Length: 99
Image 1 (cartoon, rainbow, N blue to C red):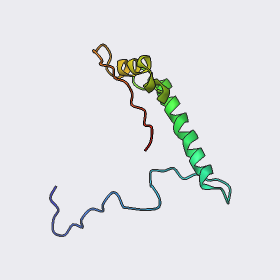
Image 2 (cartoon, rainbow, N blue to C red):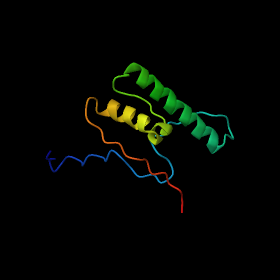
Image 3 (tube, rainbow, N blue to C red):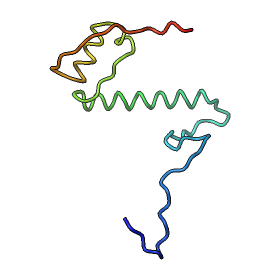
Image 4 (cartoon, rainbow, N blue to C red):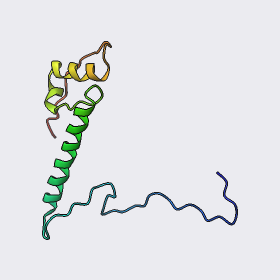
């Protein structure tokens, strides 16, 4: 797109903010609420929307738990959902034992 010399440059669609994420929903909680209250509210909203989306499109969206990554059957179920009808190579999950 070429701009005529008299046209102002378009404003950028984003800006950096090191404190607030513009995508994070703004909740109206009682005065004095702790950060933990906002995080819990966000968590509840996130999983409510995820469950609603998975219920609306079960053939496209499924929620898997982390525990399913630790078993061969769980990994097979995940891979079959993501790549149905294809050959899958299983591998042992590496559990981080820390340093």
